[in-house]
Length: 295
Length: 304
Image 1 (cartoon, rainbow over the protein chains, first blue to last red):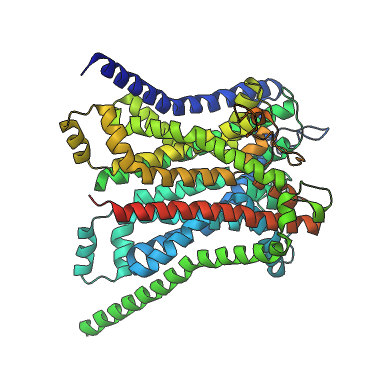
Image 2 (cartoon, each protein chain N blue to C red):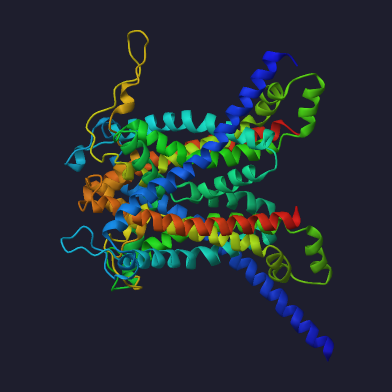
């Protein structure tokens, strides 16, 4: 190779490497920004108060900084969402991978994927304007803003994540294992639950965890339909507020830099980031494991 | 005796099998039912409101006079900016990881990092944009800050899908190119990237479509909900025929306009929200349609 050619090759490789490295800088940036403001926050608010105080009222005159009410809101909506997404996603995955004919698959799968492509603000509208009034006909005590309706809608949104990743994992199970089951006279259900599901277990669990991570980080559905009222409760029928919705609520107002209100959203964001970080890494490692076993 | 027992167990198993088949079909169709309910609901609420005036009016305190002019122009700006930044960087990063990277700790770190970034809640990217672009770089609540924030948000998705696509290019193509004396970069530029391009584009379009539906990160960096002007027109009549002053203007986008209208108690604004949702869903579906078409066409055309 000629000298200039070599030089070009080298420059391009370095340029491409820097692009790849940018993603690491993004993570560092996120951690840096969150850490910087969170440290400022904890100069005013003791960590113990943050973790144990049962009220969250930074925007009122009598201020309390207990993250628990926001966490209980996130926990509540996430639980409801997973109660929908888990069974529906898993059953869909088993149905699509073991039962459905080619034709049914090619119709149903893309429609499920559309569910994942719809902007979350649209789901928020749907939860508030359609699902809540519908539920109120069945549950008389249901408030206009509540955890139940956005939770259910969020669950539907997460179904494609759970089902498509679980299905991938089931698909990776070697045909020989399944055929062994059929050769012993098993039904499709027996093969699915006793051969495929155990073999694809780590992949399926990984999809659940990813689903939970999505639900924890979901913002607009709960910001629109759950009520923006921090409340330490597990009652799904009353207005609540999640960690994410709080960040939106503060951002909607005009909060000056450096104030404690401004810092609260970073402290809330830090908690959120740490939580989803653990979930994402566990899910990633599990996924990697099922790939290694059967590839 | 034992035979009859076995027969009964078998019957029972087959019956359960069929029952599950039915359950599976109905549960899987549940998604379709919800999707239909959502679309019907939105169309019944908003379709009548959709007219030319709605597309060309600025927001207003009176719902019947309000429109989405500033919002859809803002969405267009954001789309172009996000694509212009996320696409080249994402493809470059993917090319490095697939074609150049050696298996070492740094590569492992970059990979696990990208996998994690793809799962970071979008609102966290909003806080990143607020801290770095809006405050530290002093870009204020500008379109540029919004575009950069969303570019970072979709970057991991672009990288992951581009890598997937690069991986499907068989190594025989590369070897043939090397055999003809091409260098590594010549091989990538002239053979590998063109072969992988339909898949890369599919992923990129889906990523941009995702960015256009994002609300939370843009609210966090301070996009406005009431914008009664457009950013400066980028196309000028005098030399050099374009200017980028508009990049520093405040902006709104469709999802934020929708959020603002949904949050108001008056019925008229809910109708506006539904009408704006129809426009947003139209954009989303068209982009997804293009992506699916590209993927379909490339799968038919090339068979190695």
